[in-house]
Image (cartoon, one colour):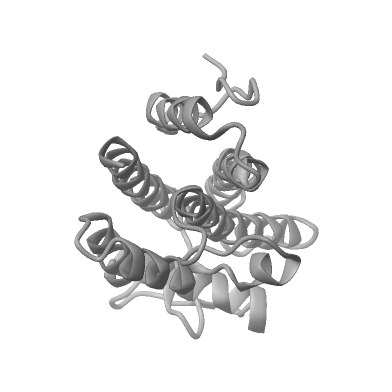
Amino acid sequence: MPLKMNNLLMPDSFPADQFDRIYQAVANRYRQHPNYSQYQGAWNGVAYCYKAMVEYDERFTASIVKDGPAPGEPTRFDQERNLFGFASSAYSMFDALHYGIFAIGSFIDANNFPLSSAQDERRVSFRSTQTAYSNAFGGDSIVGYFSTFSADAERVDLDALRNMLTHRASPPRAFRLGGGGPPAAMTRLDIPIDKNTTALRAKSAARLLSNGLTAMEEFIQRH
């Protein structure tokens, strides 16, 4: 079934029912709020980035299985492009999720969640969202979600991959003949290059997204 908000067909791993429930609940209560379009754009972004992440994962994994971790050009370029697209899409999904969560906070408390100017919009980040919820709803269980998300080892791993590929380099691949360790790995991060490189991280991203949606849905029900 396509998503209710944008008619987009999502991968089976996407928590579509939960996503739609939140969208409908927020629309029913806050559609007339001046910041509603901020939330709507962010929620669209979550869906688009997730779908892109899955497609990049599938392309990267298929190429690794078919062509191996040491192909010539242009296949190597295609693998690097899909790896970069995967990591960027996964983390952009989290950025959109937390922007949407910030926008929902602004429906309730404009002072702690300012979104009245372009400068306010640029200031929104995971950390600013965490701080705003801690200040405005310090006794609410959603505050614990932010700490759990930040400390999650698989989230840290995704961030390290995204940070390397986005801000520093496309690191060389190291190859081992015999002995311990994976036969091919991304240098500097020592991430194995195989059929699980993006596939396992896609599952981690799906789990982290579901956790965020659960925290947000329960928050909406309480407030």
